[in-house]
Image (cartoon, rainbow, N blue to C red; front, side):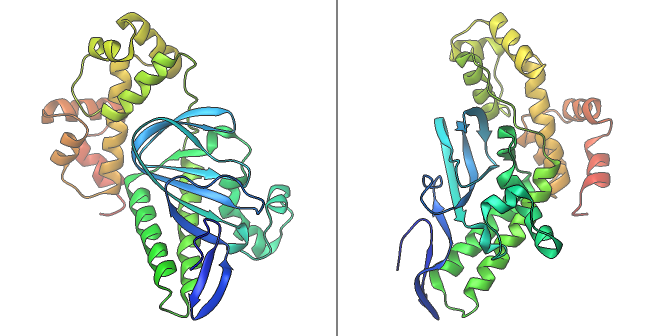
Length: 298
């Protein structure tokens, strides 16, 4: 079987070393090659600073990187990073597609509708290459990639190319909707100490720590740290931690059915009254009311 990172070889039912211009692989996508491949990178654990096309951003799991045929991520300061990638020619979605024509927007009719799911991959904004995933979207992504791996590895069904393509297109539709609704990922600050602190906070926001302890970890004093956070995020360190906690709590209440008490614990609270009061201050609703109104699984 051809182990190329750019193709999947057919070894059962359909034979050919370059049967399908799509491959699922462990780790980051391979460097750009002399054949056009878009790339999708699913960050399922950990965090890192990632540079894409000269833009340096923080990526923290769960997240996705959406890349055209010319761009690949360079990871730095990775902490527990785990990722999987899909490289694919856009013709997998529609055999008429080529990267240049997708950028030009020359397709019409149903082809234009198909092309919509690839907008994130040809977007020109460097800040839209990286997107955070909700728990539901992360679970869908992990499940779909596992399904695709199994289909490509076994090929025990004559329809494995069609089934793989259908699974991938289904995931692309979900990613496209999430990308449309997501906020642009912020650039990392130029001050390496503040960038390091920002990454540490994203990794440990559910833990108890003091601003003084964070200042020692990142090599700057408390005032410099808080001033740097305010300049970059608009919040003090403590206020930014609360923002991350409430964002995570909102996603868990909206996208899962785990008990509110477990949500509280996962985002770093051990006092129900404190958690409920903080959540109400940020969202205007109690955690229970928010779930009742926003949870699509009810």
